[in-house]
Image (cartoon, rainbow, N blue to C red; front, side, top):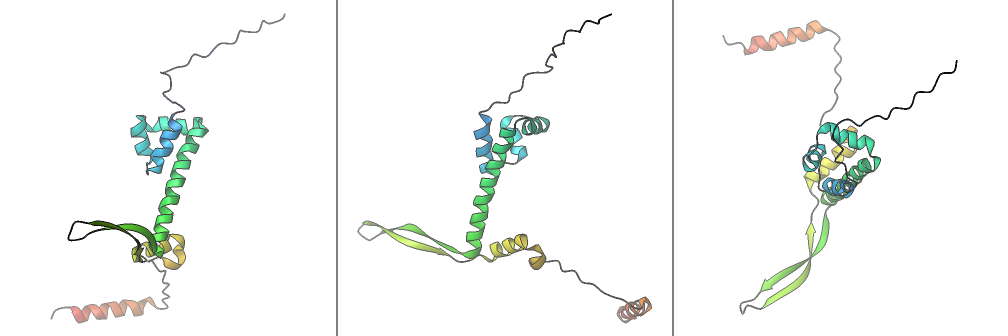
Length: 161
């Protein structure tokens, strides 16, 4: 006896349709250029955490747009931090007004000296082993009774009489 093949059932989509739109690509890139984290993206797109994660996994272009914006922003801030740590100069226009009210615009070069806080931040993050504040100190003790006696002796000296 030959069995008849069952007709394929079409799955019905459950839930409301996704609000995802390909126009979000530029929007999230620009938000991330402004420093947006996932919380801000969720607020601006008016979606929840689960939806954001689903969009990141389901739409590789969406995830790439977020990554692109964040990488560009990080690079820009990194460049600024580096310039601040090393010091830099730039052209600027100074405007002067004399006693008669004559306004004069003069091009000058403004110098910014290296900034100590930026240097420390840069070095601590770039080379943690050399520049971190915490130092590992190893103490070897041969006789614990000697330490206990020393502590007790210092206590006896401080005790009021």
